[in-house]
Length: 178
Image (cartoon, rainbow, N blue to C red; front, top):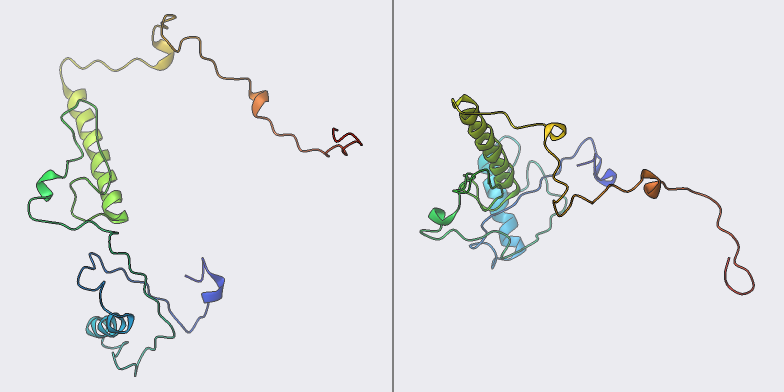
């Protein structure tokens, strides 16, 4: 954390952040109750370093942020409604924490879903390439140009439009214009 927040830099201390999700059983408890339960759990996990009574590692400060609806609640039957990364539509793949993967709505779930979607795309392409009737797609410069296409007359503006010039601003004149 000291890499991101210099004020936390201390070679003799550590910082621990935790997320309870889903927190349905915790949201109504006081900060003190949550802290005490957390310390007991940390003592169970790290008995050499942490004692719930504070006799080993000491908590200098703590804070709780409670967001009751940050993670959806899994209910019986809802897992079947989560779509997989491969859809029934050809060449349409999905990624996101809402898709079928092993985590709830979370950054980890979104990342895993993206990896699963990439794997599905790669697998689909491998199957296609092994097919006897597979023809590699044409490169952009090998494709026939359709001058009747709705966007055929679109063009990329001259790069000069994007050039930023830094210069001195003119002093406003008496009339208010430069």
